[in-house]
Amino acid sequence: MKTKTITSIIIISIFLYTAFSCTTLFAQYELSDINNTKFKYNTWSISGNFGSIMFYGDIREYDFYPTSSSEIGWGGGITLNKQISPFFGLHAQFLTGSLSGIKRSSNYNFSAEIFEYTLNSIFSITDIIFTEITDKKFNFYLLVGAGYVNFRSKLNKNGIYESGEGFSDNGTQKNKMTTELIIPVGLGVNYKLSEKIDLNFETTLRNLNSDKLDCYVSPPAKDKYGYTSLGITLKFGKDKYYTLSWISSKEKTEYEDLLAKANKKKIDSLNMQIALLNKKMSEMDSLNTIIPKVEPDDDGDGVPNSRDLEPDTPKGNLVNFQGVSLPKSKTDTIVKTQSDTIISESKEILFSIYFDFNSDVVKLEHKQKIAESAKMLKSNITYKLELLGHTDTVGGVAYNKALGARRIQAVFDILVDSYDINPRRLIRNSQGKLDPLSKKDDFINRRVDFIIIKD
Image (cartoon, rainbow, N blue to C red; front, side):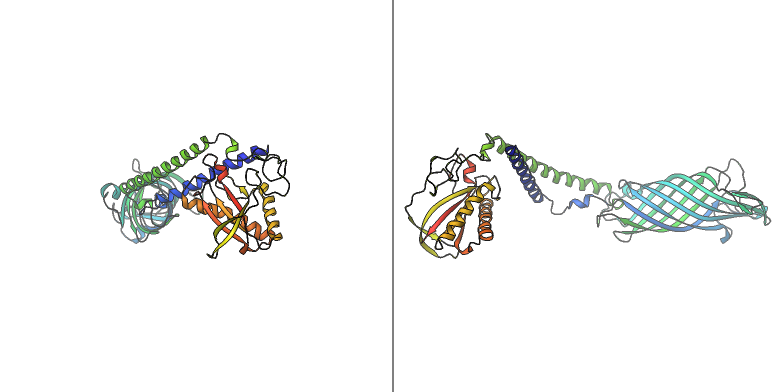
């Protein structure tokens, strides 16, 4: 069970390392002038508007212009906008206001209040005609929609109530408002003040499916009213610059082509890393090639029985990684210390500890050895300890030299922090991948050698 757990940890570690490596490589393929966030366009905005409402129906003196200001009503609304593409968007609009009309030849006048709810489709004229413009300031569009309007209106003749919609008792009591289908059509233009604010001018004709608005039914004619407004639009979203309504279809296609090319490079890089991982996994004959099994150590020399070439080592003898007792003779060598002073000392290999693939974590089974080395240093105050870091041959020279240094640092920290060994007695030397002990078994090369330096 323990072996399976360790296996799972190692495989997950390899996967996470590969994923991190792929992420690092992705950064190398970013286009210098394109940032990914620029392709996540802002598509939402909200608008407020105010303008005049003019009635077109039976109770009106002239067909196209008012006789006086009393035939001009006023209204205002709010619109929630969602841009689907550079060419097409949707506007959900609420409009409220008042309107009136006069028919002097018949001594009629009427007044009404309205509450209108519509969903409108917006089609960009600019995107169709001016496809080459990349920095637009004006955006012209067509509008067509549908919805319903609630209204309450009153018709007077010679100043006396004659009929009404939503009234009773001779116009003195308000009833439920009348509801009718309405079809708005029109055109408008947006002017970009800034990346977040637009000005808007819009004129629409609102077509009712009814002749009741002015309370004067004269089939087959149906009532209409026009709404001409000025407004302001606030655009919101995470992107600072790119709002979809201000991007042409041509620009959007070009941006997405660039993004597709960048993403293809990322995917190719990921596939390359996965192929490398698969190659490494296929080279593993068994779990033992990456994790030495924790086996009994009958002679207590710190080397498992499976690798111990001297199974009956006398207690107290120092052994190498194969369990063979180390000779007591000294070899004069030239050693370069951390202070860059060249001295002549004797070296004796104490033992080695081993690490997992791409890891600098000291295993629990090796901490006893580190304790033994600390005990030896405390017993021999003139001794120094050289920590020689090694790695396998996978990866570059610079990376492995740094990995070897991290492995040394892990041992160094235990000796200093846990056993209070003077740092000046510890010499760190990372060889990285430059001095492999074995050409076949990489786990042998992932190690730190403990070398005693005696005066």
